[in-house]
Image (cartoon, rainbow, N blue to C red; front, side):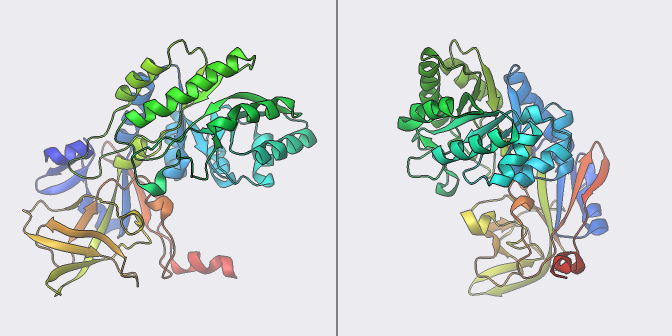
Length: 417
């Protein structure tokens, strides 16, 4: 029970059944079917509140890539959050979900001209530009539109974030940003180009950071550059330090808090008089959500016990893609007894959700919940093997709301005709 509370304080066993915000999850599984994503609204609000208390003067821009359900984006917008977007689709979604354009920042290495025009016409707060060519194209488009593109230069500080290499974005060899050694040249170009206004710096070194020392190192490097540019006469106003705070996936993980991050940044940003921007995603919604799946079959093979469930790598790709761990529990409180391989129905050997996982005895029809599934779960889901995507629910104080209907076969095939 205590371990569950470490993941999400609104998650607990009551009378032997797993509940989220007081709602029995087995009832939801039976009513809405599985696979099924369920999110806690109270958890998300609490997490945003913690960021706003730790950074009272900062702009907190939710990283929409973590979970793009418009009901969640709208919930955060109503609570005062902005949006960090990386595509025209995410920009469209943020605006549709009620995020004011002046609270939107737009990063991404491959913005198309169409997407740049979309953002210029919307009047977003800033483009986080990632190349010299992007600056030139943005200047051309802004000039044609009679707009001014407000830009922050994304600096690659060459800092090892000590995370999975696929989500490390601040190393010199990564595709992201402009090398720190070329940042001043990028600012000179931005100042010379028509209809471009350089207003700040941006840095984001990666995701799922459980240690704050890399964050400190990166922000220190970029803040030194910020001060140098100010001394050279640039009228800078924004310092966007990205996101990336990690969350608890494994039972032994200890996730850093927004207040701990604030203590580190306050030490580094002495004398800072601009506007600080943060871009949390996973740390806002990751442990708000879980994925419920039902056991279809069990079998023993090669000395292993297999539980074949109805959720696969198309629903939760992180274990297959990153080798990630998601803690699993049964919806009925029972003692752990055996080691299980929890695998999905996809025709891939890599289609697994858990390996060598100690769980209770499982039988056909049992339900499992995989925790920490609020971020990069549905957002990375697919139709592989022609599998319609799962439904999503939002619960708050005992109330349940369907925020995405389960897809059917006709939905998946309809764009083809």
